Each structure stands twice: as C-alpha cells, then as structure tokens.
Image 1: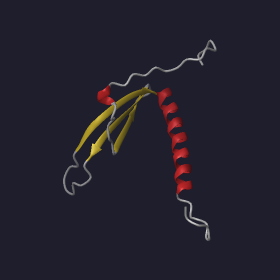
Image 2: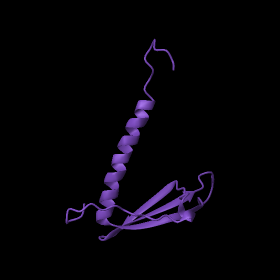
Image 3: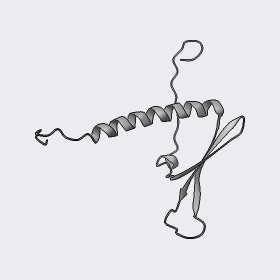
Length: 99
C-alpha cells in the first residue's frame, strides 16, 4: 500500500532478450556512503595456473536502503529453501513402505 492507503501493483516489463537471465558463479560487492554496487561474473575455475579468466555478466547499483531490503528478502528466501531442502533430505522411517 502507498502512503494514501491505496493498493498498487507492479507492472514490470521484461524484454525477451533478458528472459533467460545470466549465469554467475562469482560476485563482488563494493559500496560508498550512498550506494552499493554488486558485480556478477562468470569465472572459469578450471584454469590451474596464472590469472583466472572471467567476464562480468551484470552490474547493479542500488541505494543503501534497497540493499537492506534485498538482504532481508534473500535471507527469507534462503530460509525457505533450506527448510524445503531439509524436508526432502529427511531419512525414511524404518519399516515404512516406499511409495
């Protein structure tokens, strides 16, 4: 709800070329007093010597307030995922037939 008590819905457009998203296996976070910058990259971990090659796939700048909201949302999602995975990995009770 907004400050006037009215309900609002987000209407977010996603261009087809962004539909698949990007893959990242590395992230770097930098900050200033005003904003955070999250840089996502794809790193080739198979290189055994020398510099490890990588390519930046996305960079997101956000306000400090939004960073806090993002952290809270990520913690909530991680907690839900962890609970779901924990339930999937519970051992079977002895003597119960398999379905």
